[in-house]
Length: 273
Image (cartoon, rainbow, N blue to C red):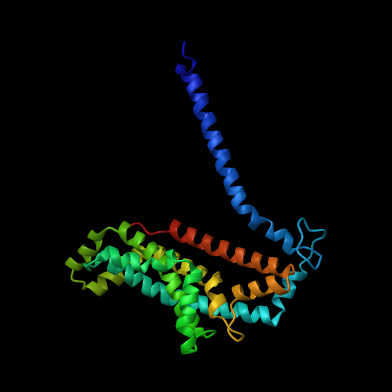
C-alpha cells in the first residue's frame, strides 16, 4: 500500500513543503537584512569606535552628525543634486518611455537597450569615463556635472517604471478622448497622465534614491568643494571611522524606507480606469 496515496498524507506533505519553503525564504531575507539591522544599534554606541553589541546607548553620534558643518554641507549638496536629478530624470525618462511604448521608432528594442545601458554597465567604469569627459571641461565637483552624471544613472529606473505603467494603461481611453475632439497633447495630460501618475511618482522616488545613495561615480567626479554624502562616508571610513558613520547610515536607511513606503501608498491609491 502506497502511504503517499492517502489524501491526509498528501495534505501533510504539502503543508510541510510550504512551511519549509517559507522558513527557507525567511532565513534568506533575514540574512540579507542583517547588515542593515545591526547598523541601528551600532549608531547608539557610547564608545568612540564601532562595536556590536553596544555597551551603552546614546544619541550623541546623531547630534555629532547634525552639528558637523562638513557632514551637513555634504548632505545638502547631495540633497540638491538628488532633487534636481529627480526632476530631469523623471521628465526625460517619461518622454523616453512614451517613445518606446507608443512611438513607431525604428530599432525600438535597440534604443530601449541603449537607454537601460547605464543600469547594466558597472558604475566604476562609468565613473572613470565621466571623469575623463568632465575633467577637461572642469565639471568635476560642480553641481552641473553631478546633475548630468546622476541623470544618466537615474533615467533607466524611470524608463522601466513608466514603461510598465504605460503597458498597463488601457489605450482605448486615449482613443475615446481623441474621438471626442481632444488633440494628442490634451489626451495625454487629461487622460493618460492622470492614470499613470502613480507610476511616474514611483519613478521619481527611484530616481531620487538612485542619485542620493550613489557613491561610486561620486568618488571619481567629486572634489574638495563639491562632495556628496557618499563620498564623505568613504573618506571617514578610511580616515575617521566612528559611530557617526552608523548614524548617517541609519538616517539614509530611514529615508529610503520612508520613500519606499510612499511609493507603496501611491500604488495602492492608483486610480481605476
